[in-house]
Image (tube, rainbow over all chains, first blue to last red; front, side, top):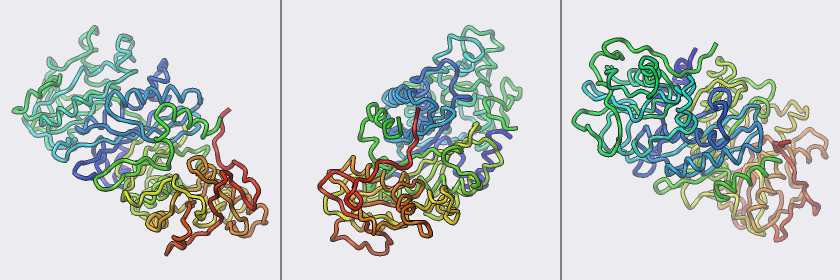
Length: 287
Length: 287
């Protein structure tokens, strides 16, 4: 059993419509408030060598990234912190606070608890105009498939390429890019935190189209043998880039750096250079 | 170091104003959205013998109680669930869903994770008119001090009075009462989850008044020797009653069952029958 199978259990109880996107949506005056929550903890998320400041930063960043992927502006963060050592608290809060400040949000509440394993749950709230909100649904055959930045760098660090430490330890949520892309007319968007391949399969599952990538257009981490670099860019997790589809007539979106890596297809498959992409990436597995 | 000392560390980083109430406040059209997050986990919160359904119910209830204590209407819940055994998920979600349905809220999102210790973080969102919101501040000398229900029952179960199992295992957030009390003009309110005594000290720390209780008016769990029953009602944790202050001319508030247990005083102390109440109750402690 993996994350996505467990999600079907939840869908059966709370309804499929509450499980589809990076954020939930709540009406808020003339706008939409998007809300998302993420659990991170020592054994699976906080890599050996991270400072408390980096742990706090990452905890905020992953949630701000979910907000960015809806084309929304992050506004507020709540932090539930389960500490195994209370002196860690100040560094964690400072890291989260600095990340929020950098991307226009504020920490407005939380909970502190003692825990056998350092566990942090961040809940983020953002605002977006109804007309600008972007979801995972909305991709159309013929749309361009695009990604910001260079996927695979976080996993590259874990595979021994230590020059990519910052990508993994201090992820930069694509907040500015998300806002500009939403206004620029992208048709569907999510972040690629589980990897480009798995993200495309997530988009496949909720859209009436497939995706065909061109490996020569896929940006890959530099300084790594080509085969391994492509493997990292497709299947590596831990990045927080935006992956999105864009109607061709809306390309290019001004002031955003992104790569066009393929097109959306009528055929409901995920291909690269005409061959199937494997459905794998970062997933928790359950025995 | 205890919970309240750790909170001062957080206040120094994110600002005191973000740490004062049961919920944070966010503008939402003509209303205020209140937001709160709570972390619960196996070793400190889920008592031996609880079913997965009860664990889910309690996880939702504690957060709905925070919303009720602001006089707000619970609307939405997000659940981050760290599972040590995946078959627990369905029962937990069903319990949380049933609690939400009972009190007018809906589960709209969440996160699932694998964890060495069952850990659930619920984030609740509620709505309230600006004119009706109730905070911990606002108590005035001369106000009546009141509490809903019978405090001490959850702790009574832990002390061996097994007839109070439901109070601990399936807490009932005072949602209807919170709404009616807010409209009825209460001046300050919070829930008593850490005990009546500690809640009064929390109110003491943010108001310009103290509190004087009359032990003959304090409702106590029945069927327990009087001294022990009083001890439980004052210092027991795990209840989710509302404790509030009420200007005398607004008493009684229609359609709400509550007890007047004392008055707010000019002197900044917490007394019962003229003697000091001890500053203790349910607190995590850190060595």
